[in-house]
Image (cartoon, rainbow, N blue to C red; front, side):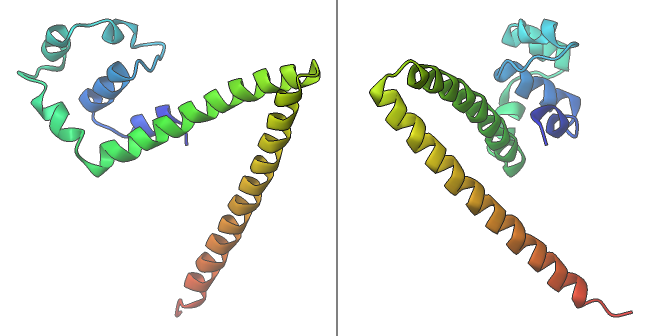
Length: 133
């Protein structure tokens, strides 16, 4: 699930607040990203930011934040990978070592993800087996 899909399930005010806070662009929200707090409150028909700050303490917000950070880290990792890969191709010894370490770590991560998916599928099958008809 991407961040836009997750945000689409929210109340429009919370969605706008989150997108404004993290400067998440969409074709229809450029005006919101540039608003001051006062303009945003007037636009969202709220008297203060307290309701949004309180929302930041909820599980719903935390889950969105974690998804946003995960996606941001993935983009950053791609950028780092491209830089390291290019330097390794040019013969930079440290970059070659780092490139090989990144490759090893990515393989281990993929194996762990595959094991987790297999385990989750097994749990799902076990739950399905307990059904009585």
